[in-house]
Picture (cartoon, rainbow, N blue to C red):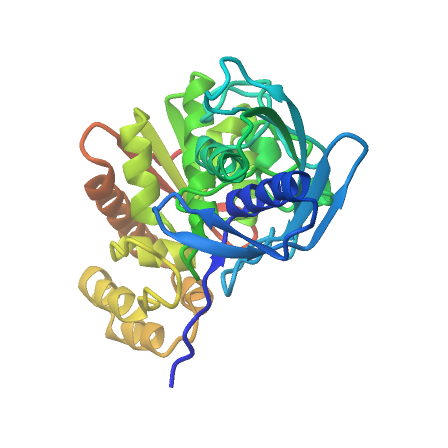
Length: 366
């Protein structure tokens, strides 16, 4: 029986819970063991408090981020909030004034194109709303309407940020406080898709109308070596999100998209797979064998391709001995990408060999 994967909560939910816990300590005089937080979906979630204590002029609480069964570099991170209450806001009886800032381990935005302007802490609008609502609930339950100052911090934020693409996006000094719903659903890859969208936005804000999409760090490194004259913002890692990244690139107004990939991903893209993860798109060696039969009239080659266990093994059979077959894969990538991006976007496909050399370029600029 297939195991049901466990959901978790976002960094934004963790920050909201920590802030509410600190506010409750100030108002009630005792640290809560858990707090109830309203999610951006309208649902609620009970979040355990990790540490909570009074400070000289306020309180600090922390929460351990739990991503459930989703792979996430922030899973297990401690996320905290320092809360200070000031004199009641005027006029009396009005809503509390809540001021949210970023402290240690929370990144600061340095480039345009993101949801917040340069100079702001990287606490996205959704999490900010959650933080304000969570603290507002604590204040509302205790009468006085105070000005509330909240500083979100992440003790290991700088260290965790090194495992992300934050610096490329212009977020320096720590992680981003993220979340579009407040919930982390296993294998939803919400943080990764948000990073793709942010990378494309930053590229457009930098004035670029051409972007290079790669599937990971290694293919990106080879692409940057291929086009060393282009700025780092021109390169965006899209992982397995073939269709989504092309649709986003089109919506953001790019006129050219270059797909720079290895042969395994190239085969899946050539088949038009919207998502190229192995679990969602079978290794298309049967299709490659069929193309070999049609283009090369070579039944023996087709049989050898079908007998291969990996795309790398198949690549060794066709490159450089059968350039027409490799070109067919590249042509089909362009056609599939064009269906996702639309007619307004010029698509170029580049296939690397496994040493990082260009084995195929649809514009023949090898």
